[in-house]
Length: 238
Image 1: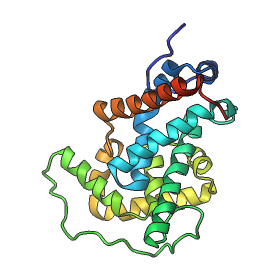
Image 2: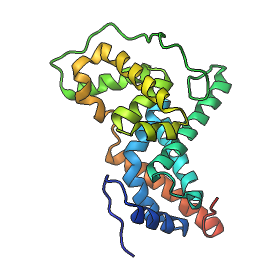
Image 3: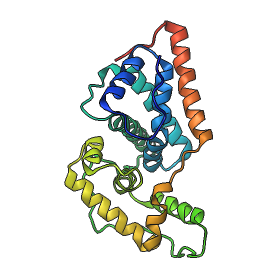
Image 4: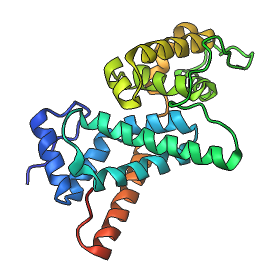
């Protein structure tokens, strides 16, 4: 069986079809290839939404299990990454809704009315040290991103960090393209109050998903899939 390339480059239609076909038949090695290909980008979406490393890993793991079991429903109308991103975001938003019910606090997520464009965000008054290393700047950006309302933060990560197109972002979130543009502009405006020109140097490195985290999520998902197979034969689809 030919191994699919483990790169960040988009799969062509033929390779994508072959990967999906193998996963539908229960090929966990093919699914591992898919996870490692998209782990970092999908983790960033989860982390931007939930603002917590552990919660983001848990949501990503749950979304992967859902993807494996429903892979036969993937029709190729969008890319695999776009399809997976919707699963991850749905899982994150579901967790936010559960948190809302527990805490009786309304989270700012898509599906509710947009907050006013003029609503401000409270930032600390300390300016970043311009002589600090890039790692410090990246940490500052991550902290400021956590302070943004969810509707702005998620769009910013998808557009600026993951460099998804307006169309892909709109499709993943289920919102109009004009809304994507306005939220992205607003998010950048708020962040630029603190990061100014340094923002462009760090925005592609936020929420890094290193090898240890990547291996941990992959191992947990494969372990659960292995347990499913042992308990009831081939995993169920759909």
